Length: 166
Image (cartoon, rainbow, N blue to C red; front, top):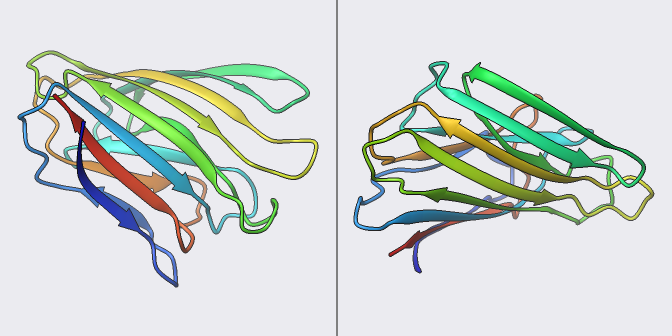
């Protein structure tokens, strides 16, 4: 496992975080996220590959909040759902954590991913999510872009690290 890059958000936040020029020399990609959003609630964490906003993303997730469990899915979406970030109305100075795994990222068949996400919160409700999806592209993944999806931005000290697994 080789660290490619780590991005840490400074004061003022960041609308998105992008990794470009990903070499096709490995087998899999692994992304670790520690995030906080400027959104007041739980903000979805989303991903795009190769700057592609076409309807190529299909996903399913399972989520629980300590009281109930639900699931949802999306087909032919313009982004991949990969977790949920901690918002400003949750416990101060706490961050969500995600692990995103993209096997065979340089291969010539459709790409898949899985993600495990948890929100820290000193209250009754805290989220855990499992996401899995398929990305309908046969191109090698050379860039990854991460955004929040409910109108927020990444808060200060949000950190995303990209690794290549050989």
